[in-house]
Image 1: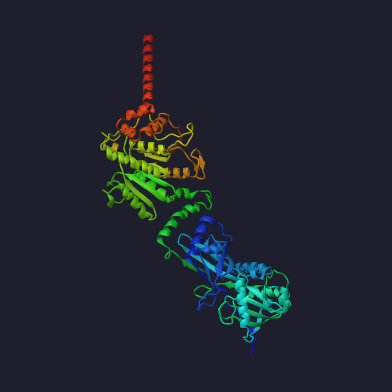
Image 2: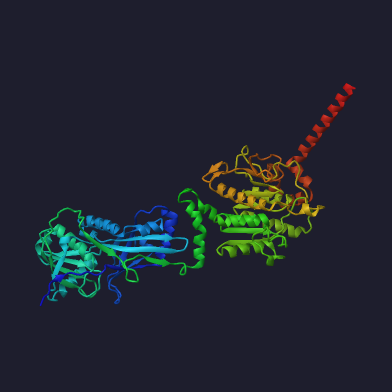
Length: 630
């Protein structure tokens, strides 16, 4: 006995969004999409052969691979194209007219379907990603539409079509991208053709529901297109094909003949928003902060603010070159602490500290990497460990090393020779060298070695209420354009500035804020310099690249200066470079013990003699003039 009733439908899919999907969405949002909230394509491969017995619908699994245009399909999987709209603001997501939005997507499926009935199936996700809290708001919709006239009444036939079901299953396995097929006049299964189905009146649809005798809501899409293609069709046989068990057939009847022939149908009924876990028609919220590796969260969070710069302000900013730069900090005192904090804020991942001192009781209040408990311990190792506590993925190393200083006699040549070799090796291993040591003479050897190795040097020095931040020129520049180094203004070689000094002369007596100002400017100078491939360039996406920045707190003024390299510089002149290249450590040893030797090599001694001679000539001229007057 048959019963006639309106055909009911089950939801098309049940969504499962993997953690990797949200991680990839985060990456795309930060690095690629930025403020772009337009539609982005998705691809899913449906496994219709291995549906869990407890499931009422085919699972719709989305992973990081779903964002790939060519998502590799395994055998027997059915590809399904979809899209995601990720909003920039949570209120935009909340205030979206969800029904109108789904109706628009349904019209797109309709337009595609009347061109190719197999294209009227799709899915859409609307989302908002809170990248600070790792909370993701999303709602999946599968546009299912029904024209008013395509309501179907059905009468269940006798279950005697197992052979036909099997033929359809095999056909769909081969034609994995098809959703419908028909029978021709010879009872052979063929691709959908409206001329053939007008005569045979048999339509087979691939189904995603597992509920007994209840097809998925996608069936409405195919029936609406069918009635549009064959408007005078009333009675037909509908085969609901499932790849496992559960296929069934219906004698179907359209409720009325479609009076409309237009492809655009404003009266179309649309549904398809997925219910949440509470069974309500509402979005879902996923909080991944408790699921993700804290180190991975930290890594992504550190880069968050930097990558946001590229959204509007600096789209051409090269963050990778900053992140991959290996930085050597000579000095782990006040300047070293503040410089390192600014570097990790810019995303630098490799920092090496060099210092031979220990933390004194006066240090923790001025040096941000140390605490009271650290007093008496080696600075370099503590500074590196402190950076790792701040950011565990930091590659930070501390090296206890005494920099051989010009004007200071050798005490233990073997140990100082080893320190020299170690310092040179460290300079070779790093890209940028920061000179942040206390004394002038301790800057000489690193300046010389950095010039030899063609490394970029950033120098920061403090006065009581003043500071100097500068970048050294290097030999890559043309000789006529090479910028000066820290010692290019000197008319004498550096000497011992620490012996026979009072306490206020031995300590760095400076206004507390000066170190922070100089440190920040030194790091900003480095990041600006890294944005250009040519050291001679004067501007980058970050602005100017000054040679020297001199600041004065007594009147809060800043000067930008530029000076060329000095041909008799005791640290970077060609004669000094040549002497070091020839003699190596022997040259350094002589310079350490006898600064006048360095003056002879650089030519400063000749300049001093010329100046003295000029002074004598002036005095003689004045004496002659006095005699004439007398």
